[in-house]
Length: 423
Image (cartoon, rainbow, N blue to C red; front, side, top):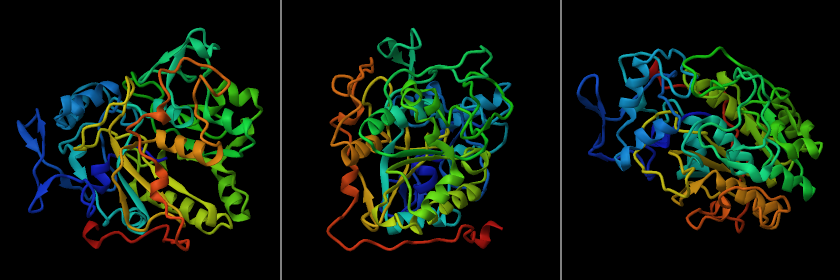
């Protein structure tokens, strides 16, 4: 899971995808700029480092603007006028003349990502499960919910919190959050399915307080729970004695080489390789390529499926109106890729998807279709619905073809050449 990119900003000009609306190669859409009274069209951005825009729940509402999808520049300008000066804060963006939320990149900078799309599967209707920032998304990723609970230890006393789930430490209140609702590792452990959560040591990509105007970098590693590493805060992980499954990403490379990868793995970056503005796009692509190369070179490759996505839109333009599933989402559209020996080659998946589809795929593949359902999973909580069962949610199984010979690895250069036109 990478950071903060909309579908249009990475794949908006990918052939055959539902990309930026154009006529004769000229975008037909735009976002009004209150500073210049101009309407800014999407444009090619050759920069390796971007500003991005604010991206909490209120910003999502304003970017979508009742389905007009034209609030992006206005939201970036509003953040630039505030006292915010730290782009790692999900509400904020730095000052600057160019509203780069309308910029898009292509295979001149994203050659490896576009190669994966050509050789495997690109999903062009993948939506963030929640219309908000990193912490709620990472909670959805492992538990299908983002909540606050009262009392903190009662899973049936929780209510949805799409923007402000239980506070991680260092928010100034001296408390340690507790996530009592059921997460996916509870079902995996219950069914003897191995899992690992691999963390890159460094700094977190987002400020931990989405209301803060600025913040100092917050360090992270496998032993520091936080917005990118929430599983240690879950009661189930502690009760099941599974804290050791949260580990350094260096173990992922070791497990891949040895052919001992767990059945289910999550991998999260640190700020420099996250692609979260102002992080380098090239550094993020190199890091992701190294992970995929390790999996492809592993004895486990023949039974591997890799799902690559970006956790939220990061304030960047996208033209597709998100589909509503409940009061929490969906959020805006993000890129999604499926890489596997059995992934359909060159296939563009147009199904309506969200990261809920990842949980559904894991449950179908390893748990016989068991869901994170308080009525059946043996651990009731007060979640409003069972996201995996939403009628509109597509099925990732359609991205695979098991009736053909498996594809071999596509090991790519970790540092691909950048177009000479970009210097």
